[in-house]
Image: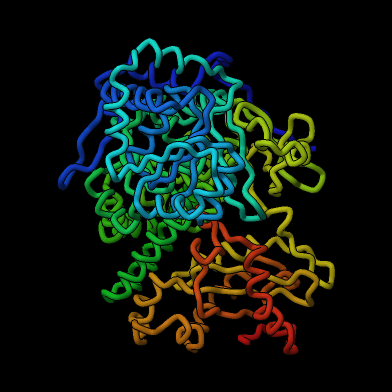
Length: 608
């Protein structure tokens, strides 16, 4: 059994809780800008001391409103400064936040509030309040609802003015490391969401050790980041808490359509993103260059960037010709992309799905080191991550300090350490099934190289076994296809079938630009585009590229382009944009049946 384990580099403190991280930060740097909020065309800084003052004031409001230590409080909101303010105020009041994705349906809201036993709920908008109202009769334990857009946080602050500082100090100090800090529900890609009990020690020890491991990122001069992925997800939640501990300035932009202007004004030094964001940046730049008649230049620049980065990673000398081309393209192409991202981005942390070597090498040559990592809700986010001092593009890095990973006989990744959650809430059967001793069974498959770098090879439950007995990992095919600018999502199918095929959706954002660049009507509907010969040929090209990476028996022989898109609202994607494979296979069963109904010459790839 292959196993890599790294001892913690910061001594554990079993008595510490998350609120201690803010108290320590205020003592160390009270006047350092810990957050920035939009103001006019720019940003207004909020110091550590000011954030602490606001946290205590809001915590007093929760106390005055009847929130008791240990109470569960639901929270539905977008990624804003107020999200983290509420988070820490609840910690200081001794309560336990139960975050709910702001895109969750009324039935999901009902399940999470009921299962968690929440006694109160905070919502950001009237839309969120309306969803809660739909199921209010089903959640009788909810005795208080506060709506942020109606000024309810300010009202709470006013209500709590008579609560003493000593009472807040008493409440924030009640929890120790082993106590529950938050209840985060899984996104439900494989069934009903389960509540993950994440402790204070999970966050505290992981933050302290990660800050040391990622020192070059968080201690970079004037380190700052702009969060735009949802803080209801453990990935961004962990980074928010890590930033408070490390003193990194954090801004927020919940509207991804305003991301580029926000990056331009905020100018972060590092980003936190999922691979789809990097794909969008690359594809948008490529299509913009194509529209301006400079597509050939962009593609040559991309090729040079990838070649240059690969040579550097392999420790080989970069030939003079490549160096000259690289310098030229740096002025013509790379510098413009750096400026679009704010001009100061040095690092980017990527997770939730494989990034792919092409994008990793491309952005590396832009001067942006993408540190790809791996983790789950159950591991409080990261278990492995590439480090600025120890990085390999195409892997998810070595294990973090305080974490151990082993591979079971079938290649399943198992994790133990400071980051592993306590249990599934009120679900001892699921908890028992998820552990082998103190090792958490992730359900993901992976492999290590000799230096301890982990590569994710698939998901155990998603392995397709064809009628011929060939085992196929869908991600190896799906990820490169999804990188194509006009592809929205793709699901590879073929379990117990004679060959592998795929369902493909188109990207409604990128499609009009691509159509215009290819002298086709830009206003073509998704249904029209799905039947268009040029569009189908482009998807075929993406599939042909993916097929080059696998054996003949694993290659995609047929595909269908759907006339609709998969979204969170349609029920086919999770809030972090992962596909709900089982739902898709069920909802599009007839389309899959059609693929296999007609005979296919398996010696040739068909466009059927």
